[in-house]
Image 1: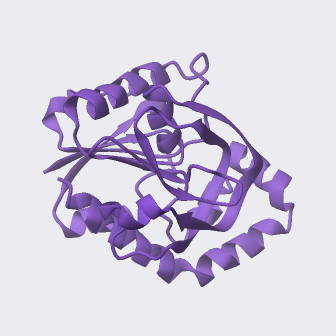
Image 2 (image 1 turned 90 degrees about the vertical axis):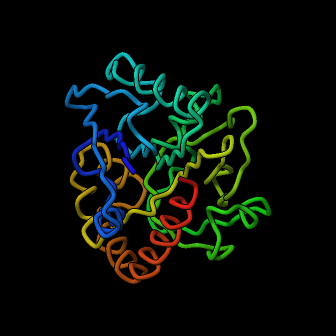
Length: 236
């Protein structure tokens, strides 16, 4: 099995999922799009993961590689119909690439939040063995306003109606982060765009509280990540 990963900034990689890939001996290749790396032939891969990033889906003038990335996502999901997982920006890119729309999130969700599975989410194989209410890390100021045609909403939060969705038989995307590691929050706080959003929402003292909340729920995050990973791999 070969996994392809689209990455948009140095510090937003597969996180805790890397250890699971290595444990299972899965070959994976990262395309660092922000460094100008080109997308390889998609036919050579069995699954695609699209990670988060500080840019927005409409920033094509500043990040022209977004155009090619969206085309690759569209081809992967609509024509190849191979397993896809999008996280945060990857969730939004899936929606945008397939004809949905994204808009500013008001208020932004930055911190440890609860998401709730919908009835469809409770029945979906990607969430098998996971609870209806889940704690997760959120760090986004954009949301999926209109899912693409044929999408099924799998999870929601109080302020964000599309926290997870399935499109077609094998495409899953999450607005929140399951890949969190013990140093994730501290690392992401060093990304200028993320730091600015963090200060706006939680203030100067909020980072310490957010890191503590992350530590308090870390075992829960990692258990959720492993369960979702196993469920995803069953699609391949």
